[in-house]
Length: 181
Image (cartoon, rainbow, N blue to C red):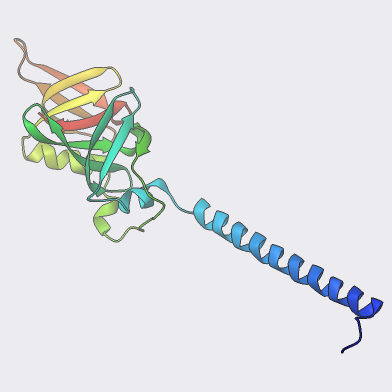
């Protein structure tokens, strides 16, 4: 039979256990701090890129919610394919128009394409070149027609379906979405 531990042996064993517990808690705290710091460096655009091809719901600044499959994400805008009265419809949504997104995971994907930096104006000029019929939803209402001009911070919508055609100039900051009409 072995001798019972002495008082000092018990004291040192207790100190050693406390030290190990403090060390483990410090490691856990450091890991948690590093995790929080990494999460703080991830932007919304990177999280949106991680769900490209998947379904999301976008909440817009006017309270409208649109659902669909996320097709593309750039730094200042995203492209969503939803369903409309006539079937599938694509929506170009400025990032600034978002008030919430449902359907994001915890993953993030950094930018991998040079086109991710294309601004809203560049995409709108493409729609202008195609003479595409669009519905432009703004904080003040909607305009339907063709894009006649795209400036550095605004676009002109030629509302040609009216009895008297009108050209409505819309600042980019008021655009909530541009959809196929």
